[in-house]
Amino acid sequence: MTSPAPHAPEPATMPRARDIGRFAVRAEAKAVARFAAATGQPEARGRVTPTFPITWMTRPDIRAAIAAALPAEAGFALVHAAQEFRYDGALAIGKDYTLDLALEGPDARGLIRLRATLRADGCNEVLLTLDSQFILHPVGEAS
Amino acid sequence: MNASHARTPSVGPLALGPFDRAAVIAYAEAAGDDNPLHRDPAAARQAGFGDIIVPGMLLMAHIARLLEAMPSVAALHALNARFARPVLPGQPMKLSGHAVAQTPGPEPATILRLKLNGPDGLAVMAEAELHMHPV
Image (cartoon, rainbow over all chains, first blue to last red; front, side, top):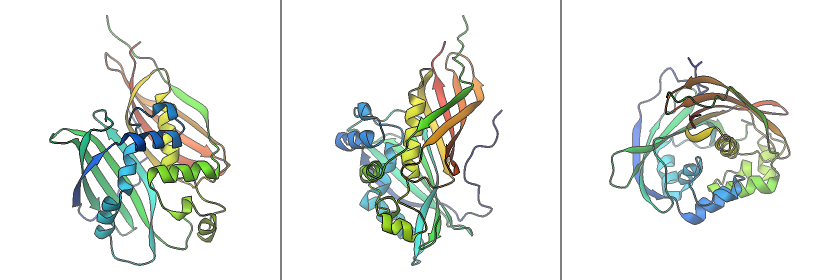
């Protein structure tokens, strides 16, 4: 069967995942179109392209929740090490979803894992999971 | 009659990029990414890079685009990527890969192992799980 997938290595000891919030999100038509154009597929402006959901992670309230869950150490930046999208249903423009976020880490190597689970509003079925891995990187050093 | 799927034993090499600074900044704005490494050449140079760096997520979006455009692919079920090395504006890349698992039947599926290489070597390693069109 398959060789090991190219995920970032599992840390030996990752601090337990902690919930950092539930957020209401929606794929707005204008944002979807802008993202499609910026990713070389302007013709896809009428559908939610597979990596569009990453844009929710930069929303001010979601960023604030993530920052609040991280160690309060000055002089560090988050470097994106790995990313996964796993779909169990299609997303629609203008539909309301809930995004549950949980964060693990940092471990001894500075690895942080952010897990997001997306469901249609009021439904239990998971439509999408996002797994984002970051390295806490000292500011001023090249990644 | 048993359905079989269109085989996708290998991918590419497919050209990807190069991206100019304007494309990098347009993506950063569309994605809400305010990381100065993707927007400010001076900040990027101070961090040790020759120029702003292309966001890994922009590369991932294009990998998804290329996969979805393949005629045998019905849908992208999963995509994961590890960002190995920064890519700078103006650097051309090539995407290549091969199938590591295939599931026949009425709902065929394929797992592709992919590599995106730039002039400095491996930039992104990825794996895609694809729903295929039955043949």
